[in-house]
Length: 278
Length: 306
Image 1 (cartoon, rainbow over the protein chains, first blue to last red):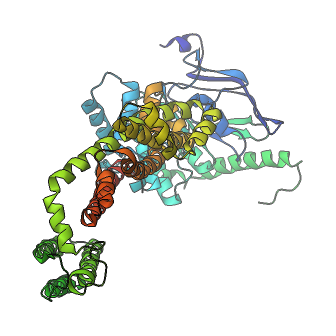
Image 2: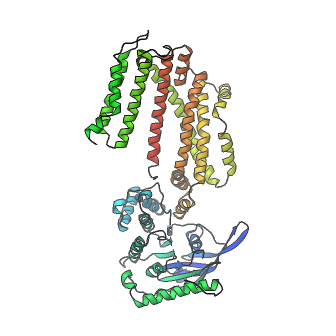
């Protein structure tokens, strides 16, 4: 049992996070008093309309930005800056365009396993590129790959680094609908694994409700200006999940409608409770 | 492509015309040395035939054949205007055969001059790049801090490096060191400026990606920032190389004892325009060869770009 579990802390503790920006002498609050936690091995999605600060929140978890107030604890220790305990997948530009797919993954592995010889790193890279179905594209440069393939490489890199935590910032947001479902299922399969390995702790930012339901154990819904946690909802569906079966069930429609109404009631609150035209 | 299309080309036709006009009577007083033109033409035509048989891509083949066609056309006009009809002043416009003959006669001297010029250029250019690129990376990276460095390098790079030559001659012990110094300056500022602006223009997202991988400081500079800025760095390198050739040949005309510029200047002064033309052609060929190689290097290093 880990130290943080002993003293009753979760894997990730986000505590009273507040972020203020000053832009052209206007001060505005991107996040206000955001508090939630993520258990070890839990898949949590953060959803909210654009401008609710969900990406700001993730950038603080990544360690790229720092909060004005508040703390993030990982394994009980406050984070300062970036760290190799967290693997990250962005929506764009996760990959370095001058490295082939293989080199990109191996470069990630190098950052966490400095002592490993390059040949071993490349072997790990090959293994994970196989897992995401890119056997035949290992020596391609990102510019030679489609957007979906680039995200597969980024996922392969994050997984190959074998960090406890995966942070994903709308990773499929720029992918066409058909490929997005393929990638969601791939991620689900890789994360659920065969049940023998320990699951990664995932924080996944999205604005797609179906994506959030399919993938997550729990959904943190945020509201905008300033960004706050609006609701936390557990997703009641058993794993392993199968999209085509799941979406046909009545429970799924009910749950989805509940989420949607919560989502829109937040917006209705924002515009003073007046009529919302959908 | 059919055989007919491959071989029935303007270049081949022009070759036959070039060959045929060699047998017209000569009208100049000096020996026209027609044999050299014939051998040169045959050599070039042999290359054309090999290329026609081997080059697959129609565009590349067309390009090659067009260039060969121009070359043959130019030689036809040159031969007719000099050796065959004597339309131009003979001392100023020697017949092509005389130029080829002179080239072969002087080949040892020319090679020494090429080596001298290239040695100076490479020394100045490589030293300047080796200092300017790391310095630019460092300054650019901390200037996502120091705009002062940007302005200073912009100001200094605006001074045409040729104005340093007289001062350099007073300052430095040998002509060679002056040339290296001037080429160093000519390369240093554009490379520094382009490296810094390359660093400043690296996508924020690329840097974030590196940061979340927790790369170290050195690794950030040389594995991430350097390759990301490389396309812009090459703009500065290209500029430096072009200016270096202009400067060196000019400088060699002012004060050198060897080098290609010296060769052209010295023989022009003596009224030996055959050799002056040889020198000019050789400079042209050397510059083209260097740019070609440099381009290859650039394309190889930037092969990841679309």
